Image (tube, rainbow, N blue to C red; front, top):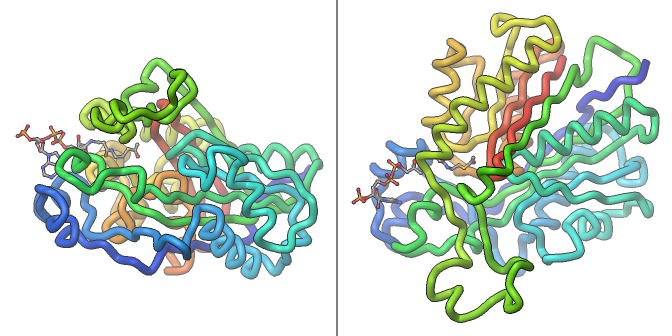
Length: 332
Ligand code: ACO
């Protein structure tokens, strides 16, 4: 049998730290409001001319490759998850492919927002298990600070999101004791417009107009309370689904790495599953919500801090725009 395992991981965040107090200068908000509602204290914003979604993905990939003892020539396929690609087309995957000395390998972009990394991991897992590829790079990278408006009008969204990238190398193995056990993917498109960015899209003859900008329809729209309600239901559901599929229980878990959506959501999930503090990881306090990048950043940090060790049962879980939600259960 061929299985897939994570053989290397890394992350990159831009150097530009934006605190809640910095945001107070730009919009009518307060550190207290942001911390109470989201747990976020600071986030990173990209530097124009230095960081792009593809370049941040490349930095994270270099670290993941280094840790896996591989070079770009060893990689057979790229899966790149982002909601904020450098261009409308082509996707960020091909831009990453030209940044490092990869061969002329396939590069696939995934558009499932906050669930993008887990969807990407699932794709890699299937390609490896069928024997098609041996080493796949799965990347999540986002530049979101320029999608949001740093103003009173944009404040409900702008205080939550940040920029950054994470990457893992998924590798073929014959060792059943260290591998991806299963992945579980879901979507419910009827709620697409509860968390979405409408313009510029292809529905209108004029993709962009001054009216769209005046009405703020070029900014992301989020029905915060509805997102909260669905998220706190789907996170526990999809974690339990992964455990049940493998005849395991919550007590067997060593670490849950949730998409860093909001500390209140994570706390609710922790409470619902009765997980002790050391079995669920949060770093949203320092990076904000980095969408497809949040899980690989958190996973790398947790591993670097010694919170994940060989043999541990690790569950990755995500929920986001679409709505989409997903989990992956790993034996580390
Ligand atoms: N600073 C200060 N005040 C604000 C801000 C802000 N940034 N944004 C909104 N407010 C105001 C509102 O205008 C409103 O004022 P009013 O009462 O005078 O009308 C008040 O604060 C409360 O607004 P609500 O939208 O009702 O705020 P709520 O308490 O619901 O908190 C939040 C908003 C944090 C988004 C909450 O709904 C939530 O946690 N939702 C979950 C969604 C989420 O976390 N999304 C990010 C992740 S998406 C994902 O990754 C899946």
